[in-house]
Length: 307
Image (cartoon, rainbow, N blue to C red):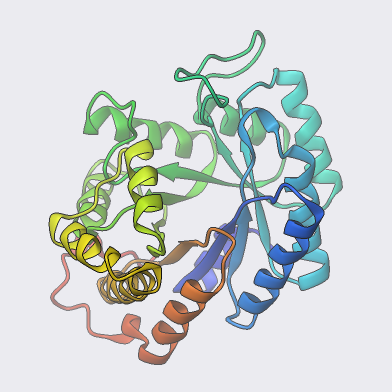
Protein backbone atom coordinates (compact mmCIF):
# COMPACT_ATOMS: atom_id res chain seq x y z
CA UNK A 1 0.00 0.00 0.00
CA UNK A 2 1.23 3.50 -0.78
CA UNK A 3 2.33 5.45 2.28
CA UNK A 4 0.56 8.67 1.29
CA UNK A 5 -2.66 6.64 1.28
CA UNK A 6 -1.85 5.19 4.70
CA UNK A 7 -1.27 8.68 6.09
CA UNK A 8 -4.48 9.95 4.52
CA UNK A 9 -6.58 7.17 5.99
CA UNK A 10 -4.93 6.52 9.31
CA UNK A 11 -3.87 9.29 11.66
CA UNK A 12 -1.84 9.25 13.70
CA UNK A 13 0.61 7.01 11.87
CA UNK A 14 3.37 5.22 13.77
CA UNK A 15 6.37 3.94 11.85
CA UNK A 16 9.72 2.35 12.66
CA UNK A 17 13.10 2.70 10.97
CA UNK A 18 15.67 -0.10 10.83
CA UNK A 19 19.09 -0.59 9.27
CA UNK A 20 20.36 -3.74 7.52
CA UNK A 21 22.61 -5.82 9.81
CA UNK A 22 26.02 -6.98 8.59
CA UNK A 23 25.61 -10.68 9.40
CA UNK A 24 22.96 -13.38 8.90
CA UNK A 25 22.72 -13.67 12.70
CA UNK A 26 22.10 -9.95 12.93
CA UNK A 27 19.40 -10.18 10.29
CA UNK A 28 17.55 -12.88 12.19
CA UNK A 29 17.80 -10.83 15.38
CA UNK A 30 16.41 -7.86 13.47
CA UNK A 31 13.40 -9.89 12.39
CA UNK A 32 12.85 -10.93 15.99
CA UNK A 33 12.77 -7.21 16.87
CA UNK A 34 10.38 -6.42 14.01
CA UNK A 35 8.14 -9.34 15.00
CA UNK A 36 7.99 -7.94 18.55
CA UNK A 37 7.13 -4.46 17.32
CA UNK A 38 4.59 -5.86 14.87
CA UNK A 39 2.23 -6.39 17.83
CA UNK A 40 2.01 -2.60 18.06
CA UNK A 41 0.41 -2.48 14.58
CA UNK A 42 2.82 -0.06 12.88
CA UNK A 43 1.51 1.89 9.90
CA UNK A 44 4.73 1.15 8.01
CA UNK A 45 8.45 0.59 8.53
CA UNK A 46 11.50 1.80 6.62
CA UNK A 47 14.92 0.27 5.96
CA UNK A 48 18.04 2.35 5.40
CA UNK A 49 20.51 2.09 2.53
CA UNK A 50 24.25 2.01 3.22
CA UNK A 51 26.70 4.61 1.94
CA UNK A 52 27.67 3.84 -1.63
CA UNK A 53 24.92 1.25 -1.82
CA UNK A 54 26.85 -0.97 0.58
CA UNK A 55 23.65 -2.63 1.79
CA UNK A 56 21.80 -2.45 -1.50
CA UNK A 57 20.89 -6.14 -1.75
CA UNK A 58 20.13 -6.39 1.96
CA UNK A 59 17.85 -3.36 1.91
CA UNK A 60 15.78 -4.75 -0.95
CA UNK A 61 15.69 -8.26 0.55
CA UNK A 62 14.72 -7.05 4.02
CA UNK A 63 11.97 -4.77 2.72
CA UNK A 64 10.64 -7.66 0.65
CA UNK A 65 10.72 -10.02 3.65
CA UNK A 66 8.95 -7.52 5.90
CA UNK A 67 6.14 -7.13 3.37
CA UNK A 68 5.77 -10.80 2.46
CA UNK A 69 6.55 -12.58 5.73
CA UNK A 70 5.25 -10.13 8.32
CA UNK A 71 2.56 -8.34 6.33
CA UNK A 72 3.81 -4.86 7.26
CA UNK A 73 4.09 -2.14 4.63
CA UNK A 74 7.75 -1.23 4.14
CA UNK A 75 9.68 1.60 2.52
CA UNK A 76 13.18 1.30 1.07
CA UNK A 77 15.64 4.15 1.55
CA UNK A 78 17.67 4.85 -1.57
CA UNK A 79 20.68 7.13 -2.03
CA UNK A 80 22.63 8.68 -4.89
CA UNK A 81 26.02 7.88 -3.38
CA UNK A 82 28.34 5.97 -5.68
CA UNK A 83 25.71 5.29 -8.37
CA UNK A 84 25.46 6.36 -11.98
CA UNK A 85 22.02 6.98 -13.47
CA UNK A 86 22.16 3.56 -15.08
CA UNK A 87 22.90 1.91 -11.74
CA UNK A 88 20.11 3.86 -10.08
CA UNK A 89 17.66 2.55 -12.67
CA UNK A 90 18.99 -0.97 -12.12
CA UNK A 91 18.29 -0.80 -8.37
CA UNK A 92 14.87 0.75 -8.92
CA UNK A 93 14.05 -2.04 -11.32
CA UNK A 94 15.00 -4.56 -8.64
CA UNK A 95 12.74 -2.79 -6.15
CA UNK A 96 9.81 -2.75 -8.57
CA UNK A 97 10.31 -6.43 -9.40
CA UNK A 98 10.35 -7.23 -5.66
CA UNK A 99 6.92 -5.61 -5.24
CA UNK A 100 8.21 -2.63 -3.26
CA UNK A 101 5.84 0.35 -3.55
CA UNK A 102 7.46 2.98 -1.31
CA UNK A 103 10.85 4.66 -1.64
CA UNK A 104 12.63 7.37 0.35
CA UNK A 105 15.18 8.98 -2.00
CA UNK A 106 18.11 10.70 -0.30
CA UNK A 107 21.39 12.18 -1.40
CA UNK A 108 23.17 10.11 1.24
CA UNK A 109 26.29 10.68 3.31
CA UNK A 110 29.81 10.56 1.86
CA UNK A 111 31.43 7.11 2.03
CA UNK A 112 33.35 6.31 5.22
CA UNK A 113 36.61 8.22 5.38
CA UNK A 114 35.37 11.06 3.16
CA UNK A 115 34.06 14.39 4.43
CA UNK A 116 32.61 15.87 1.25
CA UNK A 117 29.91 14.48 -1.04
CA UNK A 118 31.11 14.04 -4.61
CA UNK A 119 28.77 12.57 -7.24
CA UNK A 120 30.24 9.94 -9.50
CA UNK A 121 30.49 10.69 -13.21
CA UNK A 122 27.00 10.24 -14.60
CA UNK A 123 25.47 10.36 -11.12
CA UNK A 124 23.24 12.74 -9.18
CA UNK A 125 24.01 15.41 -6.59
CA UNK A 126 20.76 15.86 -4.65
CA UNK A 127 17.91 13.86 -3.19
CA UNK A 128 15.45 15.99 -5.15
CA UNK A 129 17.15 14.92 -8.40
CA UNK A 130 16.77 11.30 -7.38
CA UNK A 131 13.09 11.87 -6.54
CA UNK A 132 12.59 13.38 -10.00
CA UNK A 133 14.33 10.45 -11.69
CA UNK A 134 12.08 8.05 -9.80
CA UNK A 135 8.82 9.87 -10.49
CA UNK A 136 9.61 10.23 -14.19
CA UNK A 137 9.95 6.50 -14.78
CA UNK A 138 8.34 4.60 -11.89
CA UNK A 139 5.08 4.53 -9.94
CA UNK A 140 6.56 4.44 -6.43
CA UNK A 141 5.15 6.36 -3.50
CA UNK A 142 7.94 8.84 -2.74
CA UNK A 143 8.86 10.40 0.60
CA UNK A 144 11.44 13.01 1.51
CA UNK A 145 13.68 13.96 4.42
CA UNK A 146 13.63 17.35 6.15
CA UNK A 147 15.55 19.00 8.95
CA UNK A 148 13.88 21.05 11.73
CA UNK A 149 17.31 22.34 12.82
CA UNK A 150 18.63 22.67 9.23
CA UNK A 151 20.70 20.26 7.21
CA UNK A 152 24.33 20.55 8.41
CA UNK A 153 25.35 21.81 4.95
CA UNK A 154 22.49 24.30 4.57
CA UNK A 155 23.40 27.96 4.05
CA UNK A 156 20.33 29.23 5.90
CA UNK A 157 16.75 28.28 6.83
CA UNK A 158 15.20 29.63 3.64
CA UNK A 159 17.60 27.72 1.40
CA UNK A 160 17.06 24.56 3.44
CA UNK A 161 13.29 24.89 3.13
CA UNK A 162 13.63 25.43 -0.61
CA UNK A 163 15.13 21.94 -0.91
CA UNK A 164 11.91 20.56 0.56
CA UNK A 165 9.94 22.36 -2.16
CA UNK A 166 12.23 20.81 -4.77
CA UNK A 167 11.55 17.35 -3.33
CA UNK A 168 7.78 17.87 -3.32
CA UNK A 169 7.85 19.29 -6.85
CA UNK A 170 9.81 16.18 -7.85
CA UNK A 171 7.13 13.86 -6.48
CA UNK A 172 7.50 13.54 -2.69
CA UNK A 173 4.08 13.10 -1.06
CA UNK A 174 5.21 13.31 2.57
CA UNK A 175 8.25 14.36 4.60
CA UNK A 176 9.94 12.73 7.60
CA UNK A 177 12.13 14.87 9.83
CA UNK A 178 15.59 14.20 11.13
CA UNK A 179 15.65 13.50 14.88
CA UNK A 180 15.24 16.44 17.28
CA UNK A 181 14.70 16.91 21.01
CA UNK A 182 12.97 20.29 21.23
CA UNK A 183 9.43 20.16 19.89
CA UNK A 184 9.44 23.90 19.27
CA UNK A 185 12.01 23.29 16.52
CA UNK A 186 9.54 20.96 14.81
CA UNK A 187 6.53 23.26 15.11
CA UNK A 188 8.53 26.29 14.00
CA UNK A 189 9.65 24.33 10.94
CA UNK A 190 6.05 23.28 10.18
CA UNK A 191 4.90 26.88 10.51
CA UNK A 192 7.59 28.06 8.07
CA UNK A 193 6.77 25.24 5.67
CA UNK A 194 3.05 26.01 5.68
CA UNK A 195 3.66 29.73 5.29
CA UNK A 196 5.82 28.99 2.24
CA UNK A 197 3.07 26.92 0.63
CA UNK A 198 4.38 23.45 1.48
CA UNK A 199 1.30 21.37 2.31
CA UNK A 200 2.41 17.71 2.47
CA UNK A 201 2.29 15.84 5.82
CA UNK A 202 5.44 16.34 7.91
CA UNK A 203 6.06 13.39 10.23
CA UNK A 204 8.39 14.05 13.18
CA UNK A 205 11.28 11.63 13.58
CA UNK A 206 12.08 10.65 17.17
CA UNK A 207 15.07 8.72 18.52
CA UNK A 208 14.69 7.53 22.12
CA UNK A 209 17.98 8.09 23.95
CA UNK A 210 19.41 4.80 25.16
CA UNK A 211 23.12 5.69 25.39
CA UNK A 212 24.52 9.14 26.25
CA UNK A 213 27.80 8.88 24.35
CA UNK A 214 26.03 7.48 21.31
CA UNK A 215 23.48 10.29 21.11
CA UNK A 216 26.22 12.89 21.49
CA UNK A 217 27.98 11.39 18.46
CA UNK A 218 24.76 11.25 16.44
CA UNK A 219 23.73 14.83 17.13
CA UNK A 220 27.23 16.11 16.42
CA UNK A 221 27.25 14.36 13.03
CA UNK A 222 23.82 15.49 11.83
CA UNK A 223 23.77 19.00 13.25
CA UNK A 224 21.01 18.36 15.79
CA UNK A 225 21.15 19.69 19.34
CA UNK A 226 20.35 18.43 22.82
CA UNK A 227 18.51 21.08 24.90
CA UNK A 228 20.65 22.28 27.85
CA UNK A 229 18.20 20.99 30.48
CA UNK A 230 18.10 17.53 28.91
CA UNK A 231 21.87 17.48 28.48
CA UNK A 232 22.30 18.33 32.16
CA UNK A 233 19.97 15.51 33.22
CA UNK A 234 21.71 13.06 30.90
CA UNK A 235 25.11 13.92 32.34
CA UNK A 236 23.86 13.41 35.88
CA UNK A 237 22.03 10.19 34.99
CA UNK A 238 24.94 8.81 32.99
CA UNK A 239 26.93 8.54 36.22
CA UNK A 240 24.33 6.03 37.42
CA UNK A 241 24.79 3.73 34.42
CA UNK A 242 23.21 2.86 31.06
CA UNK A 243 19.96 1.58 32.55
CA UNK A 244 19.32 4.94 34.19
CA UNK A 245 20.02 6.72 30.89
CA UNK A 246 17.61 4.38 29.11
CA UNK A 247 14.88 5.09 31.66
CA UNK A 248 15.36 8.84 31.23
CA UNK A 249 15.45 8.51 27.44
CA UNK A 250 12.20 6.54 27.32
CA UNK A 251 10.45 8.94 29.70
CA UNK A 252 11.62 12.03 27.79
CA UNK A 253 10.66 10.60 24.38
CA UNK A 254 7.22 9.59 25.69
CA UNK A 255 6.55 13.14 26.89
CA UNK A 256 7.93 14.53 23.63
CA UNK A 257 5.73 12.30 21.48
CA UNK A 258 2.63 12.98 23.57
CA UNK A 259 3.12 16.73 23.13
CA UNK A 260 3.70 16.39 19.39
CA UNK A 261 0.55 14.34 18.90
CA UNK A 262 -1.60 16.52 21.16
CA UNK A 263 -0.56 19.55 19.10
CA UNK A 264 -1.43 18.02 15.76
CA UNK A 265 1.57 16.10 14.42
CA UNK A 266 0.31 13.44 11.97
CA UNK A 267 2.27 10.63 13.64
CA UNK A 268 5.69 9.59 14.87
CA UNK A 269 8.56 7.95 12.97
CA UNK A 270 10.76 6.08 15.49
CA UNK A 271 14.48 5.66 14.85
CA UNK A 272 14.76 2.29 16.58
CA UNK A 273 18.47 1.42 16.15
CA UNK A 274 17.14 -2.12 15.55
CA UNK A 275 16.00 -2.43 19.17
CA UNK A 276 12.47 -2.93 20.41
CA UNK A 277 12.36 -2.15 24.13
CA UNK A 278 12.37 1.65 24.12
CA UNK A 279 10.04 2.00 21.13
CA UNK A 280 7.68 -0.62 22.50
CA UNK A 281 7.44 1.13 25.88
CA UNK A 282 6.85 4.57 24.35
CA UNK A 283 4.27 3.52 21.79
CA UNK A 284 2.41 1.33 24.29
CA UNK A 285 2.10 4.32 26.61
CA UNK A 286 0.94 6.56 23.76
CA UNK A 287 -1.73 4.10 22.68
CA UNK A 288 -2.96 3.93 26.29
CA UNK A 289 -3.03 7.72 26.79
CA UNK A 290 -4.14 8.65 23.23
CA UNK A 291 -2.90 12.26 23.38
CA UNK A 292 -4.06 12.93 19.81
CA UNK A 293 -7.64 12.93 21.06
CA UNK A 294 -7.07 15.97 23.26
CA UNK A 295 -8.52 19.31 22.24
CA UNK A 296 -6.23 21.23 19.89
CA UNK A 297 -8.06 24.49 20.43
CA UNK A 298 -5.00 26.16 21.93
CA UNK A 299 -2.55 24.97 19.26
CA UNK A 300 -1.49 27.41 16.50
CA UNK A 301 -3.56 26.78 13.38
CA UNK A 302 -0.44 26.44 11.22
CA UNK A 303 0.82 23.64 13.46
CA UNK A 304 -2.23 21.43 12.99
CA UNK A 305 -1.82 18.88 10.24
CA UNK A 306 -5.19 17.53 9.28
CA UNK A 307 -4.38 16.38 5.75
